[in-house]
Image (cartoon, rainbow over all chains, first blue to last red; front, side, top):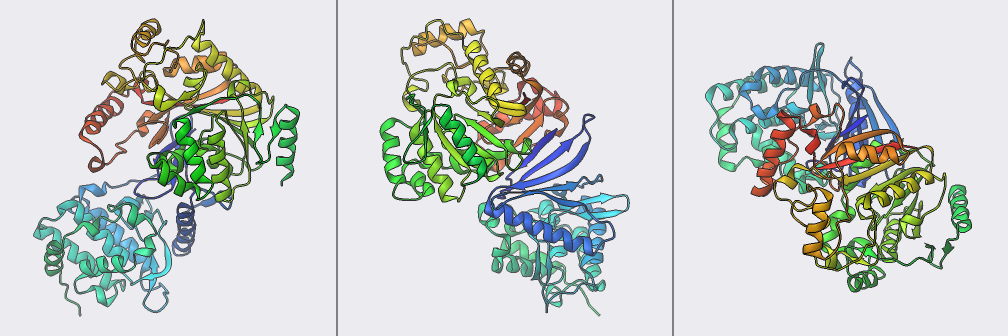
Length: 250
Length: 343
């Protein structure tokens, strides 16, 4: 039997279903859409998984089950693993963030071939879109994938700052959190996975990128202001955070 | 025109439906059931002939834009695994939200409704969205005889209205006094007869998707009115008491029966359906956020709403729902029911 577990949430127009066997175990995941925007997001997701599979040893099984001019349904293998609760914020999730950023660097790192200064964009790289399996993390939800779209490091920074948002909202971050966050950015830099422009003021830089390239997120950003929570940071908080995480580069 | 459409049109013609100049198959049986009054519908259709469907809705009946166009309406169709080239009947299709959804999934859809104005809208919307696999049929859904024709049947928010008769302009009828004599009608029996007809019209192995409110929806205990007569607590009362209350306040019998999970299962089984799967639907079947199997699905329940987006009344109701479902696993009190059953 199938369960509908998400129905067009966060401004998307996509149905998310699980197929459950008689013992209550999930056997497969399905995503479907009958709207032009939702269909386009799912086609982007297919391209995203194709790219991800090309850069990763663990190939994720993704099959288009039904596609017409008006409708698309995709079946995904079910990945059993741990999902951290991104709403717990940065510090509680710090160990998962280290794993997530490490995996990000494996995928996007120096081997990545982009076009000029633009690199593949996940577009929603949240801790919520990671499954931590015994043999390493897996990134899910490639609905906003674009092949050559963002400066290197954008998605990794997004993940870090989203976790920070859920910890502090617009309050002042703790020193230990900022120090850890700084280490993560330094790690991205050391792993050749950070555009130089992001060394200074990374938070304001990625927010600016989203605002000037909002079309990459289609209508979803318009339909749901909470889609990318880092956009909820206020100017004062952004400045304070950016000032607190200046990293030294050799 | 595809061979399947030609074949189905031929079957309709041989079943005494007459195709009119605009492509509607007419039964000759008049009827009217709509959320809109007749004069509103007239104005709406007039506008529809001049502008696109969405514009007409926005201009004349903006309060129904979501109920007509929201993709969320189609969530339940994902339970059916619809195949290309299949035939579906949408009983009481109204403005065609699910007919269009089925057609987009490549089923050939017979959108059946007694209200011609609703079909006019459905047909126009289909044309605007380049959908050519919907056939609009005007008929009383209780009298549709198309034996062994359909692979899928949709009965969405319709079963509870089956015992009603005559013109229904919902705005004038919902919760309003309107003296009516139903004779000796047995609502449950008339609903069962309708389900038997739906079953006859399905092919062997064909599937029914039925959606209806749960009689024991937890919010009925919190003072949410019975969704059809708009009376407090009538859904929960024994039928004879509900009948007395309805006669007193509305001047008519209580006929819009809704059911509990076990009772709906029994009704479907008595109507001849097999392999019946029931699902709990949250927060209601029109805009489902969660559809979970009644058997074994309770563990999948989670907080599906956003606090910032709901009123304080809803916050209280959702908190109660969360406690009931998450901690007490009280599936019997889920708000709505979807049944998938096989002929």
